[in-house]
Amino acid sequence: MSSTPPASGVLVLAATPIGQAGDAPPRLAAELSGADVVAAEDTRRLKRLTSDLGITLRGRVVSYFEGNESARTPVLLEALLAGERVVLVTDAGMPSVSDPGYRLVVAAVEHDVHVTAVPGPSAVLTALAVSGLPVDRFCFEGFLPRKAGERGRRLAALAREERTMVFFEAPHRTEAALAAMAEALGGDRAGAVCRELTKTHEEVRRGPLADLVAWAADGVRGEVTIVVEGATAQAEVGTDPDSLRAAVAEEEAAGATRKEAIADVARRAGVPKREVYDHVHKQ
Image (cartoon, rainbow, N blue to C red; front, side):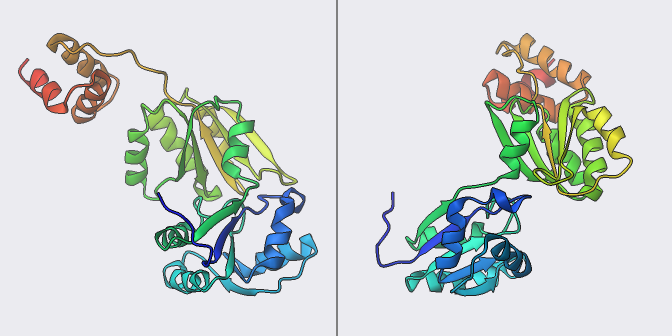
């Protein structure tokens, strides 16, 4: 457990609109106008945002994006340790959620600097809410790897994930991502592609992954968030040798490699992978 010394500054992670400026939380304007330092992923977007909010910044503005995040973090930490109030904003949504911010949060926490947030718009939660898919349990997977092989392996590891999954994706890679999802998770798995959320051309396409692949073939534009249904819960596996061997055989027949099948059956049965391996290979 840690406490926050009153002498330190404050790091404020401020959520910004993902589409319409009117969605900005009321506290955002106050935090920006009162900050000693505003760290922005894109200073040009920050200028447009402050214009939309009708405010003037009194503090200094510094850029803080993926390319300079490592070098700029110590500078911002120094400001925090000097007692300044640093407000971090990214292009849209909550900082550190697939955006710059995580390094600074970690550094602040390690030095007992108080970290707080201005809650607000989130593409993750907005897409999840409008997807029509279960929302009681979900996981956020961020951006999939760009390379096909790495992307396929990541999705294969998610094939048995029972929670609803939320992904970010670039528009020009959306078709390839959906095709990889259909291959790894099944073309009949339900999904939703949420495009340009809260903006003028907002669009939500729902349906089986195979249908969404066909739709995306014509090209996709704008900011994209993909929501995918989780896997159906699997029945528990018996721990006797015959049950374990049968479960592995069933998964192999469904397309899993033996290594993947053994690992999954071991997890479901609650036994060591070596035990399942020995029973399969002693058959």
